[in-house]
Image: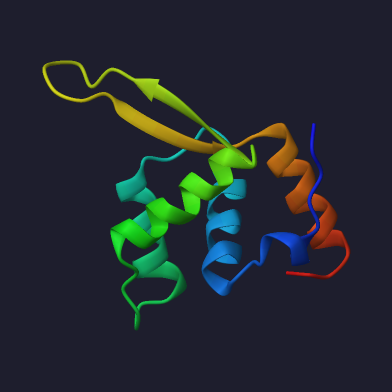
Length: 102
């Protein structure tokens, strides 16, 4: 298990918003739901590109801060990919939140 400091990761306001969204929804969200919540509730004046959000999620997957779960969509087509905070990600969020980084 690897531990990271907030300065090592280089968190931006987008990262902080994504962490807040994922911490409120422990069951996980698909990428479209994450984008909807970002664009509608957190910052309606700025629309985040889908690829930028996916790039951030992909970086977090490599650092094991989040995990993915696939669910079949019930018919033909691609399965749903749910993104949720891993145990390490939840500990990281709680520790940085207590220390006043957020």
